[in-house]
Image (cartoon, rainbow, N blue to C red; front, side, top):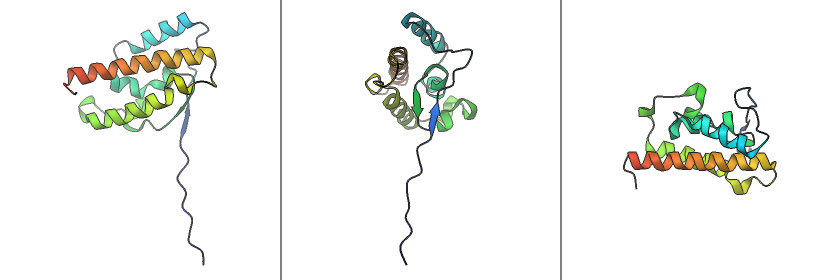
Length: 130
């Protein structure tokens, strides 16, 4: 008898929605305006859970407790949880990984990447994390 084969479950793919509130931009200026609007009032935890609202490229990964529809209170997130989710997100949306996307989506990825990175730095500063 042969041993059973176990394979890793396929990675979940979240195709970012094209919602009426955040349609795909047609110019770089529109991308900047949309990302700036999307950032308003959000901390890094909010941003991590709402990437699909603003990023129109292919997003691979599971947002887990950060997902907008499963959102926990901020106080329930540890720095380790936030850092892990942050690293997954920025790996996926990193501008260098966008070579197959349109120029608009490449620019969008860069803008979102920078916004999320800035929010993470702000979180670390506020919480005195080196």
